Length: 86
Image (cartoon, rainbow, N blue to C red; front, side):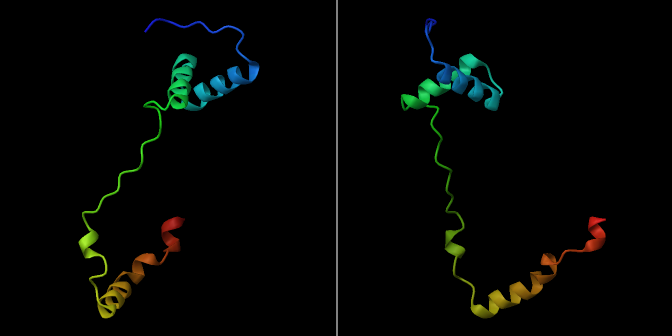
């Protein structure tokens, strides 16, 4: 697409663009494009996080005894060893 020249850009808008560029560590031009895409409902919108269901069949399959045995075994993993943090 051809270049677009913006005249009389309000100071608040200019600050917003510059702040976005600084936060994203990108150019002012790319920041303007991202902001325009967001406002137009374009591709710059955040995507919904992926949800995986490949282990769903395991949920709720342990008995209370199995869960208690597992918790007993892994209890030592939850203890902080102060000697490791010196």
